[in-house]
Image (cartoon, rainbow, N blue to C red; front, side):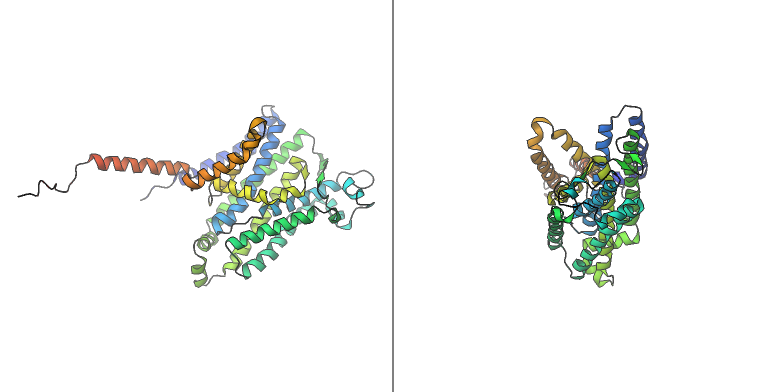
Length: 374
């Protein structure tokens, strides 16, 4: 019987402990004044990035689809939340981004976003429908591999150019900012910031649990079979395009919800979040943490962004891209399973060294050439 890897043995209790720390301990320390609001806000942002990384891992790590457009869905969710928050500002007239283009009234498509349930629905429907239409056309045309990656990157780039235009009436280059209230609570209150963090942590726990259940189900087996050899799955009678389309839509909705919680915590959303470099950086988080592990991308996203916050201050700011690139090269060459697979990799190395040492010290059972001479 083979030994289970490190992540398999400690997987359930470790996840429960981490969930308790994220959902209960950190907010409690913040309420006691031990953790500052600034630190809590940073961790809320890191957890949103962790959810985004999971959405990429569902596609890349489990289905073999390298999507370079997840930042688009992340930003669309942020814009849906931003439209609701802008409607909640109140006051007379219209915001600056509308008055700058000569508008004296709110556009009609903004008006339903006064309702939070409607905004929540749009956070699911808008990115989900875009992913469905794009995925349907791509997967029915048998587009895969590097061509799929290029198309998703082109889609994101095109959407960014569209949102940068002031004529779209979505804030242009500046986007949405100056948010004040959410569900009647001031976003400047410490308690509101704490509850936003708790909502993000709870969403992360639910996404991790849901994705683990999905990837360990029969659907997950077919999903990994598509990743390893799609032609064999096709020959077995499965419609692989439907499976890929379903997971593509699910990953888009997950990324969108992460973006929606990201906006009220950072206080701004603009088209720069759609930049293609954002999607590429998120792919690096997944690779560093451990592709195909669900938890690994979260660890990678938190670690990289925490390191980025530290390195972006002072003289090390100019070296951050080199540090990130060097870490990626290091993982590709020496840690193919990422940070999550490092304990098992070290354990395997120690086992091989011990086995070789034992083989070298044990006497050989084969006769020596001198013993065979007459």
